Length: 383
Image 1 (cartoon, rainbow, N blue to C red):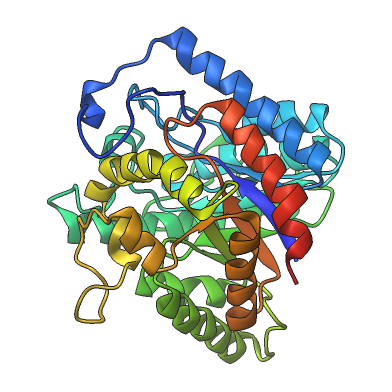
Image 2 (cartoon, rainbow, N blue to C red):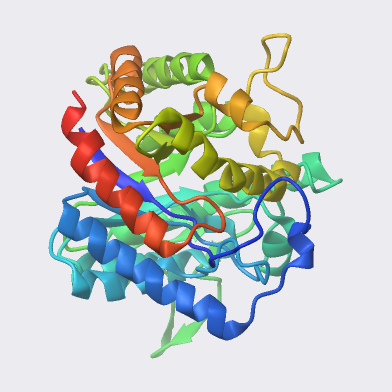
């Protein structure tokens, strides 16, 4: 089993929880945000030293609230590659519609090559209108009243951008002419002729993996057909199993072979380890509640099960007890956390596991402690 860690990467906070302040009432200065960035790099070095397989960051923009302060994890990943020896470096996820696809391809290839083949291409469609609308896309989140039209545009843009990205990374020469992207556009003069094809410089020198978050039925259909890996997070345990198996079925129908145990699928899991169950509950509750206060309005809880056994309505703000019952958060002693992760392994066949040990507002001292507890006391117990 390959076990990695995934961090939002935010500032330390001393007032997290279900009550005030509202997320929009927070505003951190540039020095505080940069101090968090430095500490995020420190955590990557710690993960490398502790033997984690991978270290994942997430791309977000304009978050003066301090929750997620890394706009370009590829750039940070290049710095981390120089400070580490073996750990693989991924983004969970690069928001593809917010990039020029050829710039994303160039940047990823540079990270992959300079790290000696340790970069992971993590891709997603986005969740936050504030970012998407400013950076050239749209997003059909619960927070966006124009959901259907925005979602349709986003999916078309993502599909075209991914086609461009993979062609650029994998082919000596390429061209693409779609609804949104046109590379190269017609009529560009070049040395007495016209540009008909492009060549990306640099391209990857090593094989690379591509992973995408599975957050909706259309994405569950699209990702296995595309042939790359799917990441499952914040889903009721029964939904995970159903979608995990559906992914394998679609993959086999499309590619003509059955997936091996856990192949092309990863489980991301929120975790908190303390000396006892009670201590873990007390430790994680403020960060859990801050997580949902921040992300609930974007529809993140749609993977939870409602009272009718169907996906919960958008905008649900779950309690910690509900998250534990749904098995979207694993909280307890090292033995308890290991037991529950092994339960998922029995249910699914886990070959790729992403642990989310940093809740919004946590100190980096706490994060480092959690990384040690997981590496030294939990992971050795996993099957």
